[in-house]
Image 1: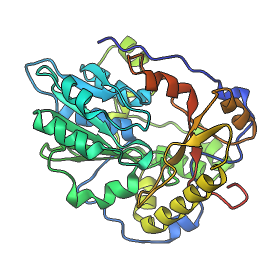
Image 2: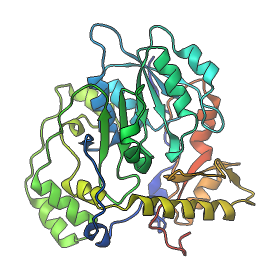
Image 3: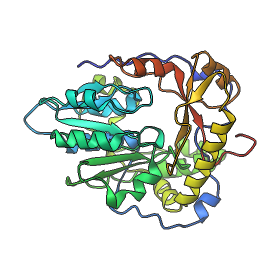
Length: 358
């Protein structure tokens, strides 16, 4: 099917600079500790969408039309890598709690469908495992998107479902890095993408550590990028989030070092504490409700909060809180997705939030 994305609803430039940020910032302490996080068997990519793009290329079935089922609620960055690789895209609906209706889902796993992506939204599992099992039993190639669940993604590495052909994750959604994605392929072989130039690496260091003079100097330096896959300029320009050039380079070396230095269990505990604190504080709110008021052992990416009226989004942004939402979902028959593009917001709960910010 032809994919049409809904337009942006709000311009970020119309709001004041956020004080409470959606993602954590880097401190020198993040570079000094060493916890020994194992990243063996992972492919480091520029970002999560590049991991999807590489997986999409590796898992294509030669000689037939590749048709992929994707959740109707999404960021366009989930869809664009498959369009780039020439897949035909179809959507399956989600329920109000972002769980999958298993009967509807099974009915959409028709003979012509070759692939399926199952997403663990916001670091929560929903009924992803059941959907993976249904898709695998129907003979589909399954890709697991855990872009929001870095900690569980890493810790499940050796116990990942054998029914999943590829698992992807984002790094910079959880820890303070500029970039970073992870890819784990079950049976297909893929080389680590090449490192970026040292000039680009130093730019990243300067930006993260807020060295403005160094950054201005480096911007004047000539740097070299590896070529993108052969394509026409028009095809590249039609993607807003996915950049084919990202397929050719790995994450920054600094990103890998920060990840290897993380205390993942400490980050999990702090995120859980912040999430529960916000849930309690918002329990009597008249403007909406928490989509998941109870968490168990998850390490949440954000707190998903459903507004009664979409107009409250602007009021929150004016309070200098970096509230996110997926406004540009593809047009589909899923009424939940079309409603949630304006009403389901993502409140920060990351581990670097101060008590005052909370």
